[in-house]
Structure formats: structure tokens, C-alpha cells
Length: 319
Ligand code: DGY
Image 1 (cartoon, rainbow, N blue to C red):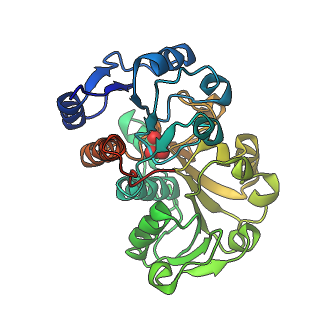
Image 2 (cartoon, rainbow, N blue to C red):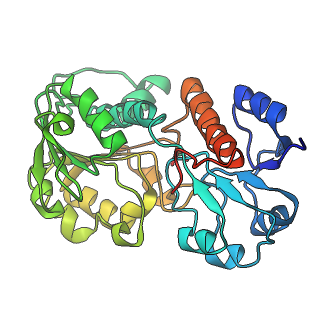
């Protein structure tokens, strides 16, 4: 049987590329640059399937120009805000993602950001690294203790719950906002808040784990920052779109929030240059899921979805 033609837009893990090359007539973007609109449109005429990352943008305008050959977009990401789902579905193109397998890696990174933001990781690292550490005092770099503090989680899906599980190891008191209340087996004693506003009032630490949608754009705006307890710490490993970055800077300037730990930014790659002057913003370049184990698992999950689709079955992660 002729193999289906597959375009892999970025440099996925070696194990993923090996399996893909075995099972598909695959073209791999070894240059590892984000696929442009022109490339996506051209690919729709040459390939039956694409495995993209969140770096490729399937806007309605791009999808409208697709040729009929392309049958499935099997994302190598859990987030699909880079895909106009109605437009893709309207063209009869199946779309899948890779949930579950990146929850622990992302939750680990959220923990790193929370601890680093709370304990002056940026300033502390810099002062030692640059030879500027010339004194010590009990008043030096005093941070905010995580153990036993109240943690607010917005979005108690898989990643939010994985983060809650890790935070329980720090004896944190867990509160959450979610579209619906979780069954007790999933909530594991976490307190449900029916509104974001109610949650913010108790969030000494706040971690965002909801998808970016038109409804969640600038979810954390000036009004909502003002509801946090003074000196709160905010962590974002979800999407940059969730945070009004000017409002975040303003909240930091006012002391409303003490620190932020960010893996996601409105502009990616690149981030927000205005953040660079603030040692109380601990930043990483969107690497929440970037562990070897998770990259393999994401690649295999995307391939599992493709295999199912071309075998005439419903892919496990069909959106
Ligand atoms: C995801 O899977 O959505 C991560 O942000 C990496 O793309």
C-alpha cells in the first residue's frame, strides 16, 4: 500500500521522526523554522497530513486557500489556539492534539517558576554569577514562602490538576476556578470558586492553566490584578494571551503582585522587552513541555492519532 504523505513542520524528537519515516512518506523540516502561511497552503496540495506545532498558524484566511488533498492536522501540542477549528472542520479536515502526555512536564515548570519567582531566582543568580555578592544580611533577598500558602488555579484540567498534585507536596491550600466543579475524586479536597473574582481574593499564588480562547483573552487584566491579595505571585505556563502585560507591569509597580513567573508571552518568540528590567519577573522561553520523555510522548501521540485516522478509526484526540 502506498504510504500517506506527511509533512512534519518542525524538528520533533528523534524517536518520533524515526517512527514517522518508517510509516509515512514523510518530509521533515530539518531547518526547523516555523511554517509560513505560504508553506502551509502549498503543503495542503502535496500532503495528506501535517504534524504542526503551535508555531504554525492555521488561520481562517490560510485554511480558505487550502487544496483538497490535506485530510488531517495532527497537532504536536495540547493547545490549539493556533488553529481556526471551525475553518478547518468546515474544510472537512480532521484536527487532533496531544493532551495528557505533557501535563507533568508543564506542571514541573510551573513549580519551578512559582518557586523561582517567590525566592528571587533572577536577582540571586545574577548577583552570584556576576561577582556582585559581597555581603549577607538576614534582610537580604527575603522572599515569599510557598509552603502552606494559598494557591489559586485557573483551569483545573489535566495540567491544572497535575500542578495541584505537586503543590500538595508543599502543603499548599488549593483553590480553583473552572468552568464546572470537579467531582471529589479529581478535586482532591481543592476548594471550588464559581467565579474568577472569588478565586483571586484568596490567591497568594495564582497559576494559569486554561486555554487561550476569545473568552480568556486578557483574563488577567487591571481589574482582576487588583483583586489579588497584596504581594501575590502569578505564574503563567498556559498562553501569553491570558495576561494583559501592561496591567501586569502596573500591578508589579504598585506592589499588588510581588513577582511573576512566565513561560508564555503575548509575542512569541521574543517575549516582552519591557519585562527585562524587572528582576521580579522570572522568565523562560515557552519550554513547559520540553523534556525528552514528553517530547517523545507528544510525537508518538500525534502519530497514534494519524495512524488511527488513516486506518479509518476515530483518532483518540479528535477535536
Ligand atoms: C502545547 O502543547 O500547547 C505547548 O504549549 C507546546 O506547544
